[in-house]
Figure: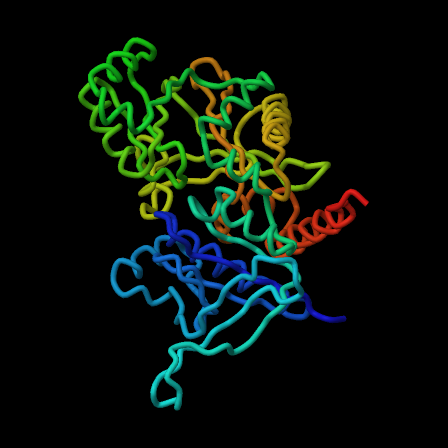
Amino acid sequence: MKRLRVGVIYGGRSSEHEVSLASAAAVLANLNPTRYEPIPILIDKRGRWSIAERPPTAMSAAEVIQHETQTSPDAGAAARETHLVADPTDETLVTIQPTGVSAGTDGTRALVDRLSLDVVFPVVHGPYGEDGTLQGLLELANVAYVGAGVLSSAVGMDKTVAKVLFAAQRLPLVDYAVVTGPEWDTERARSLGRLTTQLAFPVFVKPANLGSSVGVSKAGNESDLEQAIDLARCYDRKIVVEAAVSEARELECAVLGNDTPVASVPGEIIPSREFYDYESKYLDKGSELIIPAPISAAQTDQLRAMAIEAFRAIDAVGLARVDFLMAGDSDRVYLNELNTMPGFTTISMYAKLWNASGLSYPELLDRLIQLARERHSDKQQLRTRRS
């Protein structure tokens, strides 16, 4: 049987670049070589695409982050520049080789090869990859790809828009307020007054369009709040301020599927710090993942049902990890957020939740590729002309 050619896109122009490298390393190492021919496609921090001669190998985000800080050894050698062809042809990628005077030409680049891809696995986290921009390009190219489409990717990335859709489905949310960048830049005092009137301390402050807890802070007073918004403003033009949940327990559930999604067993995170920030996710060794979460059968059923409702609320397909907060003093559950392309290493919560639910990492990859191809095949039946 002919092997499927899978383009694994990773890296990207976001602060989650290093996490993406670790996710891609796991995917590339676990694709069944008898069924798939992987093509590693690196997007570097400048946004340049290339076929990596040395794809990433470190499957620990902490290891990648440490390496990137020094010499970036796992970024992959960018020998062949590549471009995704944004029209529906059989030639998905065009690769280009740099040339010089020694090659006997006065040009700087020469066409080397054209590649067709059967499916794309975009393991890109954060803006310019998980937010619908990359998905839009893949739609123009008319290639099957793993994960959420343009709309659900964009909505899943923007926490403020997602909250509107979650609220429309009556999913429980914490109280929150939104501050735009221009508002903060020009009316700081007025913004602080509005926020302290609307919400009681402590609060959490987040960039609206980012993941991996980058730029997230906890504020216990007005001075902390001002500093926290300044930090979040460095990453986004829209900031979310949320009421803290009393004695919060952090619970997560993985969702898989297209039209009939299913949810995994829930897991609980015990962060090494006060809350599950970037350092406790990727750098500290003290954080614990408890699977299944030590909650009642009724609470388990509630979380799984809510995860599927949230998945459908933003019209997601393929996969998502849904995060919840449970108040320790009341056991009340709040939907926190939904990630359409969660961390994807073999030790990431998404993969571990499915492993505990009976689906191994290689089997999970098979299922995601199957879902991508099924969705793409269904879409090809739709008319693009009136007659």
